[in-house]
Structure formats: structure tokens, C-alpha cells
Amino acid sequence: EVTGDYCVSAIPLTILATIPSDFSPEMAEAIRGVPYEPTGKIGLQFSRRFWEEEDRIFGGVTRSNIPTIGGISYPSYGYLTPKGVIQGYYNFGKHAIEVSNFSMQDRIEHALTFGSKIHPPYRETFETGFSVAWHRVPHLLGGWPTFTERTRELFFPRLLEPDGRIYLTGEFLSYLTGWIEGTIRSAWLQMDKLHQRVRAEQG
Image (cartoon, rainbow, N blue to C red; front, top):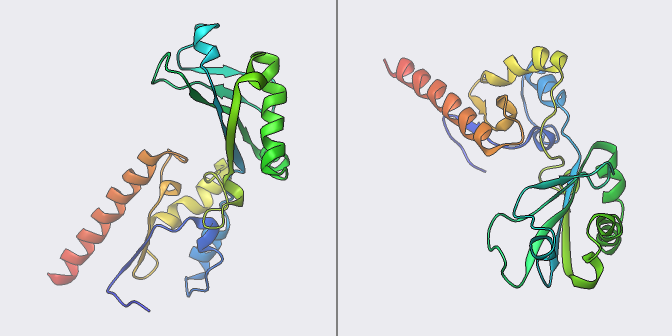
């Protein structure tokens, strides 16, 4: 148990909504009213950088029309070194949920099967892989908040303001959801509000 004059919470809304609290009804509704995007990625390690050696691809992204794969991203460092890791898929929404229900090995197999259609050397050079589904990470439960025009209008203003002595901060309090920059901007904003409040209260 910790006591303090104020609380600044950086807990994601998905988790904050599950914690017993005494938020005002309006704040509690706003916290519960912003869903987070299901999303997943996989990293695949290969014994050689065939995309550089054979295709002359140095960094960047190959976009696919396969929703469960999305984009394949290539490293922008270590060019022409012996090994490399690429992002084998980046999926969202129902497609991320679908793939996240696979075992780790089946996720790898999925990425190899479809990635081989773009890069035939996938299987013969594959070494190991690892994937994350952010909506299944216990202390996050989503990739980033997804506002609609309506939820932005209804809940964003309330989340920006303190609830008693509790201030929220996180990229959900910005227009840069899913980016560290949004988190930093919201922290500056809330710290300034708190600073001004304390100054006013102290006269």
C-alpha cells in the first residue's frame, strides 16, 4: 500500500478498467469506453540475408494482400552480414486474433508458408522465430487504443482531466496512439497540469 498527495497512472486503459477503484462514474465510463486494437508480429531469423544478396532489398517493407501477413519488414542495419531477422508478419483486428490462436510453431509455419510465396529461400534458410500478440499480453491486452470520431468526442476530453487527485497519462491521451511520442507528449501535458495545480494550491 502506497500513499501520496497525487497519483499519476500510466496503466493502459484495458488494465485500468479491471482494477477496483473509486473513479467517478464519468471517468470510469471513459476508461471502459476505449477499446484497444488486437495486433501481432513475428520475427524470423535466417542463416543468410537472401533478400539483400538476391533481391537487393535493403530495409523497407514488402506489402502483401494476405491479411494475416500484412507487411514483411527488413532490417535497416547490418547489411550483408551473415545472418538477419525480418518481420514475417504484422497483422491487426480479426486477422491478428485468428493467428494468435495458433501455437508458436504454427504461427511460424504460417509465416513461412506465405512468406515463401514472396521469397522462395524462406524455408531453406530459416533458423528460429518468435511472435507476440499484444492483445494476449496480460499487462497490456491490446496494441493501442482505437478511437472513433464518436469515442474521441465522448471520452477523450474526460480522460484528459484529473479525477480528483488522479491523473492519467499514456499514448491514449494523444493523437499519436501506438507511438512512444504520444506517451511522452501526454506525460508533458499532464505534468504541466499537475505542476500548475500544486503551485496554485500552495499560493
